[in-house]
Amino acid sequence: MGYYTDFNINIKLQNEEEIREDLVKDIIKKLAEITGYEERTWDSYSPDHIYINGKWYESLEDMKKVSLAFPTLLFTIEGKGEEDTDMWIEWAKNGKGYHEDVKIIYPEYDESKMK
Image 1 (cartoon, rainbow, N blue to C red):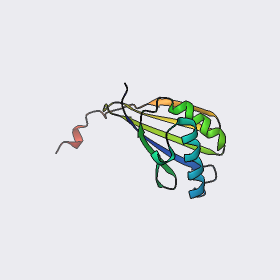
Image 2: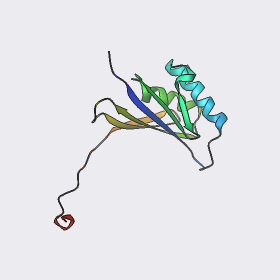
Image 3: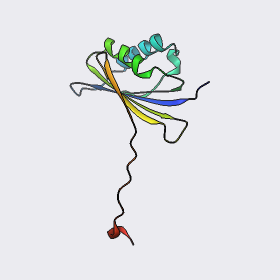
């Protein structure tokens, strides 16, 4: 069965120039081709950001494939599932990538902050 996850994909060029709208459309077209999700399913509400809510279990492997088509781009994929602790981040660039789970770290008690 599975459950839904919010996927936020940030796009960064190596040379810090702005992401063109036509580039984002090309990335979405490639995402649709690789994942099977239709182009209209992907949302780009800013030039360097793509969003989808779905059951995308191969996100890292798929993004590594997408990144091969755009080798100068760094893709950062942030995922948040239905469970509060189901959060992670992935990076993909030029066919390579890796995954890290979230680490929630609370600060130590600090008496000086008591008011």
